[in-house]
Amino acid sequence: MNRYEAFRGKYPVFIYKSFRITETKDTIEIRYEFSIPELADFRPSWRFPKPENISVKDDIIFKNLAFSLGMAEAVSYWKAVCSPEFRIECGTLTPEQIEWWKKLYFMGLGEFFYVNGITADRDSFIDIKSYGNFTGKITERPELSGCLVPIGGGKDSALTLETLTCSGVKCKCYGINKRNSITATVTTAGLPESSLITARRNFDRSLIEYNKKGFLNGHTPFSSVVAFSAEITAYLHRLKYIVLSNESSANESTVIGQDVNHQYSKSFGFEKDFHEYEEKYLKTGIYYFSFLRPLSEFQIAEMFAVHRKYLPVFRSCNLGSKVSPDVWCGECPKCLFVSLILSPFLTDTELTDIFGKDLLNDESMTEYFTELIGKSEHKPFECVGSVEEVNSAVSLAIRKRNPDKLPLLFRNYVEQGLYNPENPGEKYDEYRKYFSTENLLPESFRKILQNEMERIF
Image (tube, rainbow, N blue to C red; front, side, top):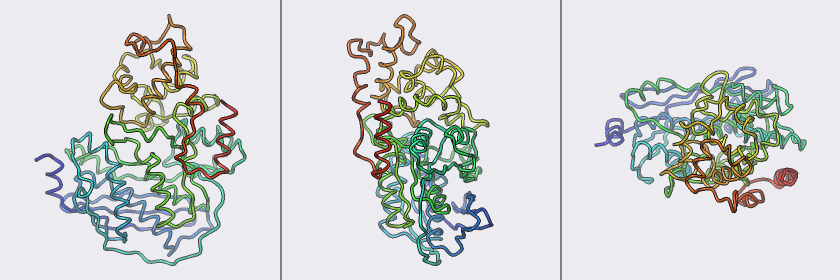
């Protein structure tokens, strides 16, 4: 019997026991309690800033938002044992909602199942049952205006913020936990620090000790946590739009030939599902969409590179985000991917200045490079662009460099016969004109994006 089946047998029930909302003059704290009977209780929490004149006392919409954020958080703790029964004691879900959450959990845990060698059945891997309820007042929906732009510190959210602010759109920014790159992105865009709304997420770190003891661990759909927490922030601050920065490349499977996507909760499929869930069940009137959804990572890289002022401040490294101040670790596939996708548009010196080392001449990056160009069973389990985009970026970067002074990884690429000197970067013009119809952009935002594309391309 494998660990998955053994844990499910020993710990058959996971309980979402409660969420408690505490309100002060300028903050709201939500405390959650999850339980795996006979093993552990977990108590994560969130703290959100709020305007002084806003109160959510007995607000049924806010309670639903807080409950839903708990559902998004719970999967991180449930996955330790993957209990077959998920029991909710503090809220009620309709059968349709249960199916929605089952889809998010199953698809969002695709990498977790794959890496742990788990064969999970979508219909039976979890049975969600709800027994509790919460009460409150049905109040008139507040008038909403303006945008909330979630900022992660990377190039994508920087490009979104820069494009919108330069077009005169009034933006507030949203960050989870304080990071230097997030604050620096906001101020580099010309906005005051006061425009950044930072929520404090307190993860129950006792889970890490169980992981060390051999309980199941792996990737979860964190972008769904971003989505629900951004909804709470936008609701408190009366903002109409939540403007994400996820691109069309996020739809590609991480594992070749399988439906296993590290970026599932950044995909258009999830974006559309969340948008519909908000309209039908959250009912805040907030409009959730990704501004960069029509674009590829290749386009975003070229557009971002135009704005050189962000080069010293942006960060996209997951390992580096765990230290303070956040840095590029210079050793992971995400660092290499960003270096590759920007390589046609920045000089070698600029790339080295960003990462603090010459990644394209680093032999230890060879395995990651092989995965990124599609010569492996799977791409790196990171938020990276498509295989086709990486190959196009590499080919175009080689074309722009002195053939006698190519960096190590590019020389290897040429020696493997992967570079076509007759038509290097053959997809370049196609990418520049690319605009995916699978998007939820309101017309005013579509025009802003298309105008920016015309200006740069």
